[in-house]
Image (cartoon, rainbow, N blue to C red; front, side):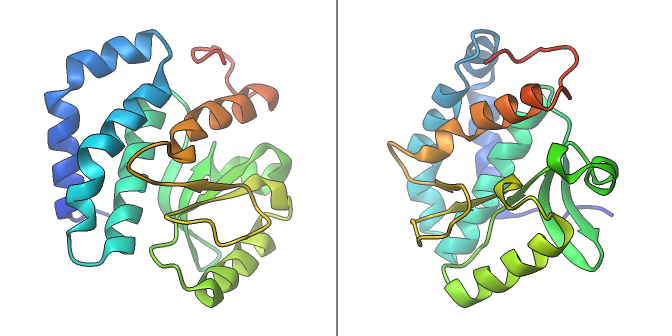
Length: 183
């Protein structure tokens, strides 16, 4: 399935390409939050001016996570269907989810602030991931959900810490056998 281009992704990856040398240095120093903060500082305002603000920021969050997970060498699957439900990001993969949900993380990135729609999707996710603490959500503002929530903002964003938390989760579950990303 070929993924369609999106103006947010194009803008994000232009910024990443422009900053590539510095980002690779930050990766080698495990300063992952600095990379995310840089991306937010430089892309957030432009992205919020694009068509639908919530959708655009959701696309930005997915793009940033895909870039970060790939460069941190953390196994993940992105934008996949499972039992009729679209999953934004699954760490490490569906096979592990089926075998042992305790070792699987689902990151949900709604492209809306409609609590009813988000709650509906959370209920669907809880049917396939019974470990509620292993469903994390990325939003543009805190809406008071019980699950672990990361807020994407231009500055001082809790989203900048998500990659460390993912790495901790993976390391605790014993999935990162190479321990490339030590946190």
